[in-house]
Image (cartoon, rainbow, N blue to C red; front, side, top):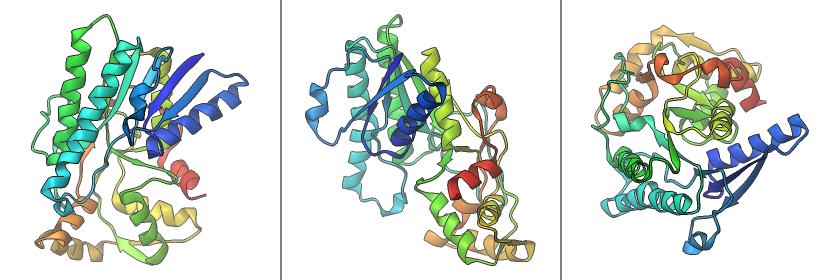
Length: 302
């Protein structure tokens, strides 16, 4: 049996992982994974005994938001939670003899997506940087975790996952907005941008395999196929029995919006820009991607 501690209560990925592992136990008819979760909203977690756990998953973190709306004094909180808290948790895990520490980082460490009409593919040679404070807080955390790992090479391993957009039932961020558009609009622009994404249950299976093998390293899990924003909106509509028309005649409006200053331009480029991982970076995707885009949308919307 593997014991897993999720550090950070009520996070989307953390709660999804706990549910997934418990459902896996039920499907196997045995308790292969025992999962505990602790809150890190105050300092009481520091008194929790980490001994006996095979893996710690760092679920605490502040997610990406519209960075233009975050005041200077609030930015320090990103570093305290995404970097300092993660490092403190890892130090405690290492001292307790935990074998694996898993940290969910983000594709944002490479900067923003390409704007509308352009493409951007991340390869193993792409350097991190050119990011705002959210991405930089993740970079700082990765650097500190690698330093901790290097101090005791025979001890705890660290797995860092630079995640693309994660979606699924109950997800936050861009997906709920796309679902609203799919529900309300009879037609949508037909933009052929490309995004790396990962469905939450595919990610949870990747994490399960990572825990099972106790392997550290730098990982870039993603769905096997790149997804366009238009394709995803159409699939969401189809999951509700609705036919959504994708019209290229609307694309010039997207192009115009992408060139506008301020929030409108930022949102247009974020929604219809491209950002992908080279598939070579993501290992054997068939081994952990249990669901296709169409299946994942049906499970999310069903």
